[in-house]
Each structure stands twice: as C-alpha cells, then as structure tokens.
Image (cartoon, rainbow, N blue to C red; front, top):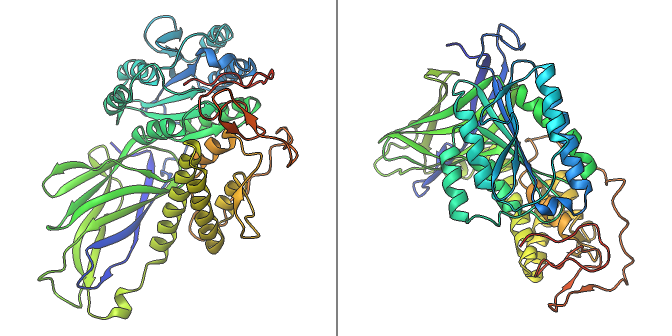
Length: 483
C-alpha cells in the first residue's frame, strides 16, 4: 500500500576515522511531505482512533481552577475531532473509568456524539488517586480494536504516580510500546517530570508542561489538531549492519531529544520505531561501534545501510553509512557540523535536566554547578532557547556569576526539566518565550524563606515544602502535592 506521505532520508556523518577510533556518529534527517495525491484526508486511509485521559485525582481540586480547566480543555479537544474519528474519554484516578462512551469501546465522532461527550465531561469531579499505568492500560484496550488506525492518546496529570509501583508502570509501557502514540501533559507543580518523559519516550509522543490552567484549553486544541494531521501510523528506521559494526544507540535529537528503542530483526539488522507521521521533519543521532582492525586505509568502507520503512515497504532512498580509516590526523579530527551541533544540544539538555534533578532532591550546590556549566555551553553556542529556560532558574546568566534565583519555585524547575529536551534546529535561532503576563510577581529580595514544620526552608514563592510536600498554611492556591 502506498504511503500517504512522501519521505526523504538524508545523512551527514563523520566518516574519517583514525585507526584508534571505535565510534562513528551520523545525523539522519527524515522529512515527510504531502504525497502526489495531496495532503487532504483520504477517506480510504487508515483513519484515526483517539483516547483522552484526564487526571481526576483529588489534587486536581487544589486549586479548583485545575479541574475546571481540564473540563474545558477536554471539551475543546473533542470539538475539533473530525467526523468519523473513533474516540473515547477516560477518567483517571487510582483506577480508570469510562466517561464517554459509557461502554468499554470507542464512539464515532459526529455532531451528536461530540455534544454528548462534552456534556459527560462537564460532570467530571476530582476524587481519588493517581495510577498512570492503569489509565494507559485501558487506553491500550480501547485502541486495540482498531489496529489499522492512527492511534493516539492525550494524557493529562497533575500529580505523581503514587498508587502503583514504578515496575508496574514500566510493564504497562512495555505492553503499550508500538501500539499507540501518547502525548503527556503536566499541570500544576506536583507532578514528576521524569514520569511524563518516560511515558512520552516509550510511546513516541511529547511531554510538556502547561504553566497555567488558563493555557490548557489552547494546548489541548493544538495537540489534538496535530494528532489528527498524522497520515502515516507507523514508520521505522531499519539499520542493516556490516559486522563487526553494531548500534550503540539511536536517538531523536530534533525537535526534542528522546531515545529510540533498538529492536533486533536478525543478527545483522535492527529497527528503531519512530511513531506516527504528518508533514514534518525530524533528526536522529545514530552512533555505531566500529572496528578498523584489518580494514583498508584511505578508502570508503560501508559499515551500515539505513532504510526508512512504512509497513513492509521502503519509504525513502536508503543511505549508506561509510567509514574511511586514515592515518591523516587532520582528516580524522574533523567533525561533521550537524554531528557537532546536535551532540552539543544533547549535552546541554542533559546538563539542564540533571541540574533540575539535583535541585528537586535538595542538592542546591550540585544544581548551581550544573546550571553554571549549562549557561557557559549555551552562551558559547548562542543558544537563545536554552538561555531563556536557564533565566527562569538562575540569576547572573549575562554577568557570568550564576546563582539560584531567590524566588525559584518548583513550578519553574519542573517546567524547565521537561522543556530542556527541546532543541534548536541546526543553524536556526531558537524561540525566546515571553514571560507569562499573569504570573505572580516575584517577592522582594529580602522576603524570608518559607519554613516548614519539618525544618526545611523553601524559596519565598514556594507553594509547598520541597522536602515533605506539605502545603504551607497560608490559604495558598496550590494545595497539597501528592507524595
């Protein structure tokens, strides 16, 4: 069956290696464009199947604007579903419950069913716990009845996955991998960014933070439109290796950094699934382990071939990965510009993410050191995107005397932790997000830290204790954060 998109696959890589080099790095660019028949929806195409999962745990009532925003956002997402799309809405607590339709199945989108779904969503209340794996398991069951569809789940949470073990979530993610794409969103300041990133990475989706409840409706609407624009359900990179070469890793590096699973096909071939596709471009960093022993010098030697496949058919012209072993140090010391760019982006993203982790676990000294290194790297690269993120965390970005902001709140830390995985395209400046107009004003520099009964001191603008999670008794909107 012909793909509804036309794909191009190109490669840029460091093929000149010294005899002592054992790794070869390549950047693969995959671009999908409208096929010759055009980009319109094909009535004979695979169709779409959608499950919207909404966190209805008790913490969504702190403040009540969160659950109200979730109801409005879900109604907005349902409203943009085209006629004929199969869909369902699921309520997530310590269990998973059908909101619409009432039976365990998918409804068919039409003016009548969209109206019924919005009415059902308007009655959602927040009570219960959080078990993300259970929610995804129901989504998998619902979508399994439509194996040929472009299957997608939109998931919202505001808390940690406290009602099931990490092992349970890992098992569910393994069972869902390759079955559907999941875009995960966090709202409020009590969720765990690593959990959302884990979901998005396993299910080839995106993870992002919604900074304010008022922003949720537009985010859901745009995420749903993007999901409905997908025209190919599954594509994968197939890498045929020439022994003794082997794949060390393959990761997406633009528009976000995320590792791809490497799945053996036979003793010389592996595949890396890339999820569903619309009209877009993505870039991947492929790292091979190679060995120049007994290989000829001064000529190109093929060590791998990369294909892009949709279904059982090749979707683009294959590309050879070549190694050229040489004793010329000038040649072997050259680095392909795209490899250099994305290697720097990966390292910078990791520095920021590690700094956020260190801060979240109370190691402020380590966090400052990591953020300082990130500022230096981003400044040297002219990386406006990551410098804008770092300014939310530290002062002194431009002066070089980096220190944690006095008013730093966990909301900023977890937002940046997720956004750190976004990358700039090679040669293009990154967007600089403007400050949110409705953000609360920063406290005066001499405002005292907030002291919890556990003895921990949190920043003046903190809404809860960063050590024990206890809500500060000040009538604060944020409410308790799940442990």
